[in-house]
Image (tube, rainbow, N blue to C red; front, side, top):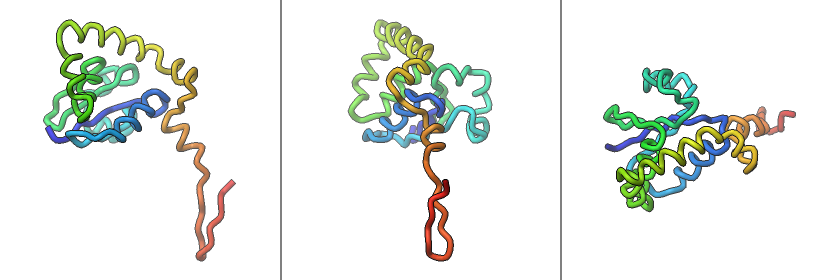
Length: 143
């Protein structure tokens, strides 16, 4: 496997922060992040609307393999150089049950946790950026 595509909620602060954190980590494979509700997501994974991607993260391998929920989180950790060992531990039968409970709780409470932790989603951050217009070798900030 050379690439993982991670379908995430770009409006969720925790999801967006996780995306930025993963991109900062050295990885064994290429990581592509696509908002689950973007037109590109449906082209890449036609099954996505039936997978509750609005409620739980979905990860797709370049071979078409799909993971969701705890298995998706474990797969994300597997992709990272410093966390692969953790992923192997979490993938064991005894630990996967615990991971499922934790991931389910975080998924169900992610919007509230994002507000509590003051984490903003990628869409909110994009909306806050002030556009700059450049004409005739001069730039102005649109207000």
